[in-house]
Image (cartoon, rainbow, N blue to C red; front, side, top):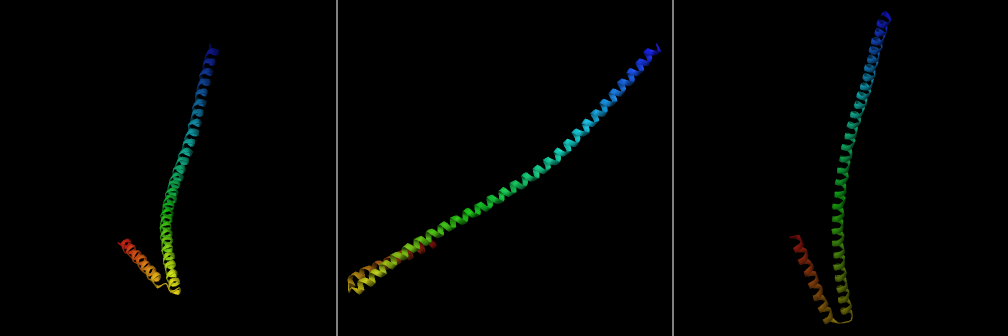
Length: 134
């Protein structure tokens, strides 16, 4: 009977030791999971901060791009205006040259007609300029 009691006590002790080691393993696993969770939280905060920085960078790039587009549109308008002014100047110069040539050839009637045409061109340009200012 003592052997049975002894075996029983040994079995109880073994069970208790097994349970204790299970608890210790469980605590280790729990600590490991907790430490992983903490690391993941830190990483998530870092990722969130990086995403905010990326969004801010994208916003700044978008603003710069919009400013560049606006500037390009202004340059296109200025280029168009300069082209139109250049064409008008070429027309006026051509008319003036024809007037000089007609006078040189003693074609005063032709010179008068071309002079009248030049005055009309200049008057029309002034009207366009006044209309665009309004």
